[in-house]
Image (cartoon, rainbow, N blue to C red; front, top):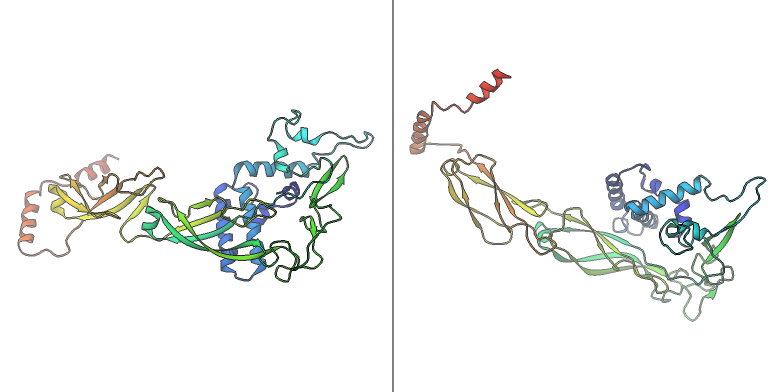
Length: 384
């Protein structure tokens, strides 16, 4: 990204969030917009595709704390005239902006605003057109509960920009070749004077490519790029969380002029399970038990997600809502170990009691008539 993009593009406006928006607000807004304008949901809609690219570009900057800070500083400096080097009656002078933005250490140390602006300041002479990194690609996938816990390899169909197959990315019609742009002399950028320094910006005549196509390719119309649909097998790691965003390096759109490919970002959705739930690396399950089991204690069988049932010892006098732990029966962690299965006890009250069971309960009620479980409640209420 050039310094001009940092100065002129309002990424907050692109996402529709205030400048003091939290990371959570930015993430929530991005997800909503990404789903609305995703190319898969707007097939053939060029405006939606362009909007999706702008949204993704804005989120890449604002979702990264360091890049967001640099972006805010860059826009603030330009907005406040922080680069004026002269004034009425003072004359104008020049100095090495490279030193200024690298911390004034003779260009030795990296970092600072020099990293933000990159090629913003032209340090003399035309430059060769640089390789251009491919665009990042966004997509979504829905996994079953089991696939999210154990990991899965899934096919993903994606649409992204790639070199045109007919012209091999040159943009020129078969049998012809592009010519070097006379305006930027093949650099792809031109310098524009601004007082004591010069701004480097993409050449308008060749649109930053460094070459001009006189007889354009009929498929890509001279751009050298075309939409490419492809299906690839992607491994989703075990233990992935619902709505987690996974980055797959180098799996995005192909670069230009030997540039590196972009990255693929996959947002994972997970279908709920009818029996099991999840808390981080642990799985959860609710197991019904009878009143005698809860009162007298028992050994109960508990189902697991992908394995045989386990037996747990229910202690005597277990209350409704008691949680026990089956170790190593949860979700897979990054290091290959597993979380636990959290088993919550639910005491089941029979709806219809007859015969011997009814007589036994009547006898139990008479035997425990002096034990009032609400007595302590009333004592506390009177003392309040």
